[in-house]
Length: 381
Ligand code: GLN
Image 1 (cartoon, rainbow, N blue to C red):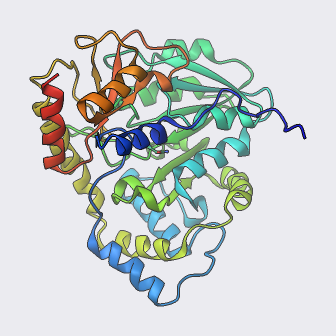
Image 2 (cartoon, rainbow, N blue to C red; image 1 turned 120 degrees about the vertical axis):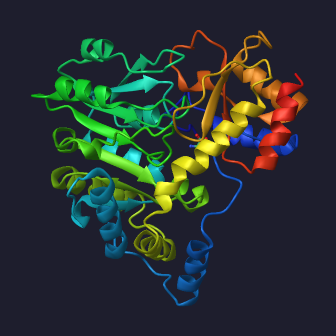
């Protein structure tokens, strides 16, 4: 028996799985994989249980429950002023599925897809599996801002898609209104499509406004805008996300979604629809909630030998460890987990060209006491 050659020969197990397993094995404080160590609103948790007990346990409609899609459309209108209808919303099994479905819907063999390194790890394999070619541009520390002249130079007749991620995982940078104007100029008069990974849409700090593609009609007409309830409701394990896109793109997106998962978990969709209707202000409190955690974590590690600029968004903090070690970042994270008892994510795994700084990422979506214990260990190195 000869098994076929791998379709993704250079891909192993994701760093998130590797580091969380290592954290468990060595009983380290897990600041690696991004997930909160606290629950979302109890009304939401109870509603899921109640819907299960009521027998709401069969397939949801393929595109998502209308009650949820309507609430998502209302939220997009309220926050971003985009007058979308529920027909432009598709509920997916996490943002990961939505990203894959969007890429699969539009990327053909030979198409080029521009993405920015460090880039979230699911983009590149999705492009490759669909025969596309990823064009990796570098975000330079410490701002990790997009160099629009570089983007312009990278555009060719084969450019099908640009993938944007703001607030940005892993660096915590946030696109500005000026960035969006540059993007508008760049794509005007072209057929280039946009994929906005906006899963941290409600986690932008210091009063900054999240620059959703939904805010700009000229951009929205060519966009898939992806988000995830996992981040917003502290429930990453539920894997419920969604994609908002204009009708022609939604039609193609749903063709992929219906054969990737068909439909998404029913009782959770019902519960999320309820909380969006009953507590729309939940999302408005998130920036403050996570900003306090960022500030606490940054002040706790301010006496360490790590160097950093506080994150502008997300629940991640990138730090430079060059004053502590000459180890490559993957080896440093292994050492940190095993010897210091704190797990982190190496940033180079998100980069085609290794960054010229020694960077690792900590997740600060943790209880204050956990952050304190982790910081004590980090300051002792
Ligand atoms: N997005 C999360 C992170 O960045 C992890 C998601 C996953 O494990 N696939 O840490």
